[in-house]
Amino acid sequence: MAVLHQYAFCPHSRFIRLSLAEMGIPSEIAEEKPWERDRRFLELNPSGTTPVLCEDDLAVPGAGVIAEYLDETRGPRLNGRRLLPADPAVRVEVRRLVEWFNTKFFEEVTSYLLEEKILKRFQRGASPDASAIRAARANMRYHMRYIGYLAGARRWLAGDTLTYADLAAAAHLSCADYLGDVPWDEDEHAKDWYARVKSRPAFRPLLGERIPGVIPPQHYADLDF
Image (tube, rainbow, N blue to C red; front, side, top):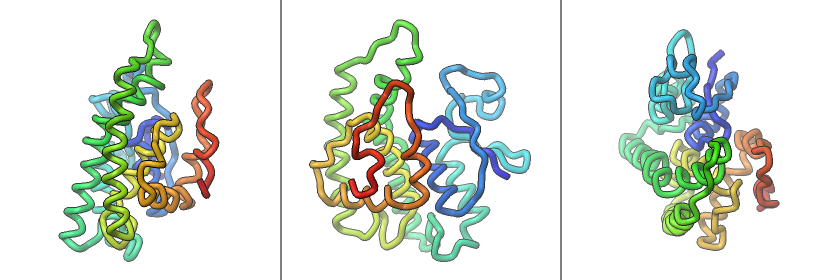
C-alpha cells in the first residue's frame, strides 16, 4: 500500500489526499511536521516539504509530481474518473489551473495564512504579522472572483468533469476556510462550486481534522454551508 507523508494543514498534502480518494487508491498516512526537519523525512525529500508519496520503494516528492505520477500509473484505467483527462487541450487547462493554485494562490494567500496563523504557533517567540494576514485576505478576494468566473462559465473549473484543478483549488480554500479567511459573500458561483466539492465523500476526512486550540467556523464542516 502507498504511504503518503503529509501535514494535515498543508494544502498541497490535502490536494493529493483528495486525489487519492477520488481515484480510489488506498493509502496509509504518515503525519510529518516539516518545521522539525526530521532526518528520516529529509532522506525522502531533501527539500523538506510535504507531500511525499512512497510506493514500491519509490519516493515521489511534491504535489505536482505526485499528480502526474498517479495519472501515468492509474489514469488510463479510470475511464470517466480520470482527473487529468485524455484530451490534450483539457490537460493543458487542468495543468494551468493546478499551477495557478499550487503556486500563485499559495504564494499570494495560503502560505501567508498558514505561516502566520498556524506555523508560528510552533515557533518560540514568534507572533503573527497582521500586515501579512491583511495582504492574504486582500489577495483572496481577487482569487475568489476568478474562481467564480471559472465556475460560472463551466460545470467544473477546467471543463465538464471534476479534475485535479478542482481538487487543488478546494484544498487551498479548505485550509483558509478553517482559519475563517474565505469571504464566501464575494462570489456566489465560487461558493456553490466549493459546496459541491466539499460534499464529495473524498472531502469528509479532511473536514474532521482539527488544530489544537484553533476552532474553525461553524460552517467549515457543514456540507450545506
